[in-house]
Image (cartoon, rainbow, N blue to C red; front, side, top):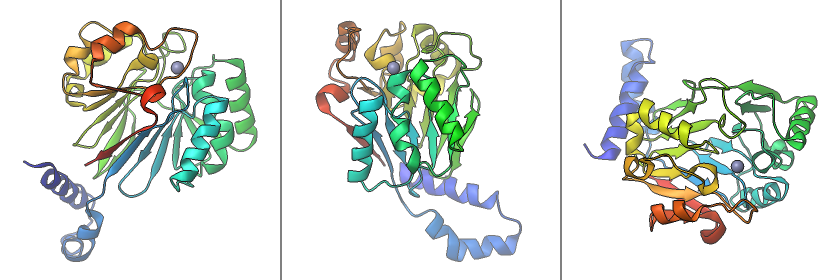
Amino acid sequence: MIQPMKNLLWCLVYTITRLPSASALFLVMLVVWPALCQAGQWRVHFVDVGYGDAIILESPDQEVTLIDAGGREGGAKLKTYLSHNAITTIHRALLTHPHDNHCLGFEQIAPLIVSKELLTNGDANGDDACRQLTGRLGAQGFTMRIVKSGDRLIDSPSGSLHVLHPQALEGGLNENSLVLWLNTGGLDFLFTADIGPTQQQDLMRRHPALANARVVQLPHHGGDLAAGWMEFFSKAHFVASTGPNPYGLPLTSTMNAAGRRISRTDIDGTKVFYDP
Ligand SMILES: [Zn+2]
């Protein structure tokens, strides 16, 4: 079945299952449903914030989710980017793990986050400056809410956002990163933050359906990959969120493995995907 028809059918089923009565169903069929199911599109921005992550998800109904905010300089870039794209409100904000180059940008972005909530993996460790920042945000009225594998953060006819990792905080800061799957029924996006090969292997084993993802962030700014990663994601275009750094990232071996199926924020700049 072609994708727009699939989306409409799912939207109809979703709507019906939430209705109280048959008369309400009739009303919805006539009036509300066409508007509810109006074709929209997801826009997913991998923002160039230097060596760090910042990813914006805009849903078809204009709800904005932010995954990480880059470092201090990255946060300034992100703020400018949001402004240039007329994004003035962030409805949901996630910090994948408490490393400065994913975290410190939230200082400048915090005023835009209307939920006054930061979704985290709950790791009590982290870079000092990041921990101080989350402390300051808490003093400003922000709540830190822990999410984990199995949580569904968005559940709408146009798509769902799932937390796939971690199940428990068993690794280092990078290994405990939140991994998120945006399932639109179209491109499908996998956001991997900084997980390592062991966690990558676990993801492929636990979630065979991820093989359908069409856009996959390369873990840890283009770092080490698990054996079989490229073959598993044979349908995907890859994105490396990266910039100048002293760690030799992205790895030449990883870039060679990706071949021409990759966009790099340090070379190509901010990359935006439109779905459908
Ligand atoms: Zn990182």
